Length: 340
Image (cartoon, rainbow, N blue to C red):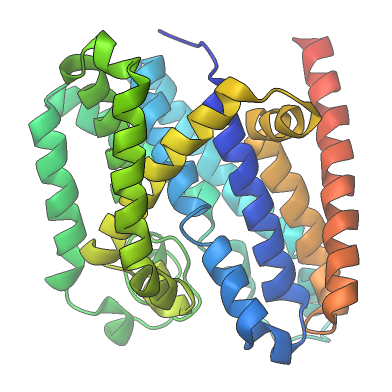
C-alpha cells in the first residue's frame, strides 16, 4: 500500500474546490439575470470540467496508487454513501424544518436522497473494489470498460419516463431533471483515473516521465486541441441536462482538458511554492472536509438569500464563505491531528 501524498494532486483538488465554490455561489445565490447572462455561463463552465471530472479522476488514480484491500474500499465506499445522505439532510436543515412545521411542501425523500457527488464517490469506490478483483491490472480491459460504460446510456431505455418519482434510480442512471452525478456516465472518470495510473506505471518509461521536452510537446498539443474544442465543451457545460448526463464526446473533451491541466499544474507546482499554492494544497489535502463544511454553510444560507445577490454581494459572499470554510477546515484539521 502506497500512502505518499502528491503536491500536484493536492493542488489540483484545491483549485477544483475553488471552482466549485464560485459555481455554488452563482447557482444558489445570484439573481436570475446574472445566472442566465454571460457571467453565469462562464461560472457554469469554470465549475464544470475543472471540478467534478477532476475530483473523480484523481480518486480513480489514488485507488490504484494506494492499493487498499477489497474490504477497506467497500467499507470506505459505504461510509461515503452515508456521509452523502447525511450531508443532504444537514445542508437542507432549514428546509426540512419548514417541511416538518408545515410551512413548506418540499419532498423530504428527494431532499435526503439527492444525488450528491459524495454518494457517487461511495458507489464508485465499491464498484472499483469489485472490478479490481475481477480485472486485476489489465489496462486494455479497463479501457474497453470505459467505452462500454459511456455507450450504456445510448442503449438503456429512459427510465425517468417510467419511474419519474424514483428516489434510488437517479443515483445510478436516468436523465432526471434535478439529478446530478448519476453513476452512468460519471463513473467513467474514476475508471479513467485508475487506467491512467496503470498505463503510467506499466507502459511509460522513467526517462519519458522525467523528460520535460516531451511534457511540453504533449501539453502544447493537448492545449491546441483544447482550444479547438472549447466551443463544444463550453456549450455542453452551460446546459444542466447536457452536462450531468453527457456522452462520449464531452467525456473526451474533459479527459483532454484534465491531461492538459495535469501537465500544467505539475509544472506550476515544481516552480512555485508560496502561500497561495500552500493554501490550495492544504484545502486539497482536506477535500472531503472542505466540501462537507462548505455545502452545509451554503445550503442553509441559500434558504434566506437564494437568487437575491447582485455582482458585489456575490463577490463578498464568495470571500466570506471561502474564508469561513477554510477556517473551519483548519480547526478540523488540527483537531484530527491531535486525536491521531
